[in-house]
Image 1: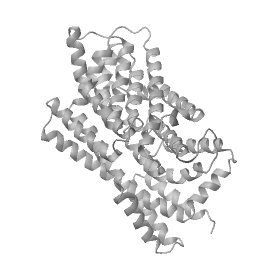
Image 2 (image 1 turned 30 degrees about the horizontal axis):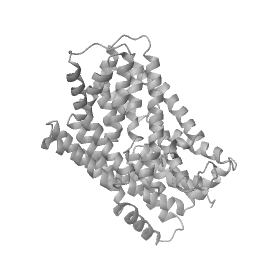
Image 3 (image 1 turned 180 degrees about the vertical axis):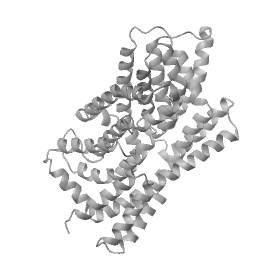
Image 4 (image 1 turned 120 degrees about the vertical axis):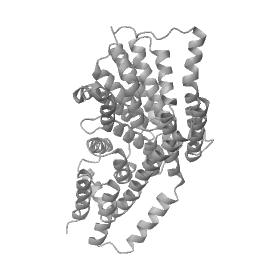
Length: 439
């Protein structure tokens, strides 16, 4: 039997099962079980898988941060705190059409840093900002593109669940992953802002709201935005400054979200129960996929999958930049049909050793190299959220907008932002210090 027959068959079976609509966790675990039985792997391999699940999942304290950060974001969303912050930002910046666009972008950053949940960010921005952007003259496509792109910042800007999982898979410190994501996040925000200001040329001023005195207006805006901003700074500062681990900071963030909710007198058991229920559901999905991916990764490598990948990449020569472009291209294309979680858990453990063995220069060796690669993957996967026809942000936006938007308007609106994403990805590859400078 050819050396690539088993790993190729395993990869095709897994991809087929996922595309057929079966649950990803069960597809990964099922494919692993099948290929343990039909491959020449010893039966003791089952013990290895159990040991990996115990060591990498059940006793991995880092993964505790995932439900805590999800809970933090859901509390802020369901209590109306995030909505209040959005209205405050609109009040402060929405005096012009450009200001309205920048306000949407700013609150997208705040939502990203406070929740890390793309769906919540996109839906909230769509419900509150889309009508206001139409009022000041933005065409529907531009408004849709900005909202979708701003919402996807939630998977890149810390504290991001994706960065936590990437750090775990790459065996790199999560605080360093968070620090490495700050530069790319600011770069994307700057590119989005420049584009939306350029698009706002010639549009009228935004309709004025109820008149407020200067002091009253500033005070109300600060009351709306400041608590959320302080919470984000405390959580991220404690992690990046080394004062707390990501797990400890996630607990701080969850408690802080409850306190902010109480400050606004939005605290009640209904909000807590709804957020807890959704957190449990989301966490169970993530952990089941992690367990399935742990099984898949072990068996795939056992039947020669890593050797097959290295052999395939060697066909493109020994130039490290060519190999990196091929890997990024493969992740980008797979992002059309696969979720970021599946790509992160299945492909990163396979691609990472290949990238780690390449020489890129610029001091990119060891941990800095893996962090640089991880952030490139994160930006790449963020782009997949915007890419038609299966970009998840597009589905969230279409569902939230209802009759206000047609699908073709959403597709047309995200194209410029996809171009900006790819431009930013190219800059990050050409200038690694944009990522490694804060590590």
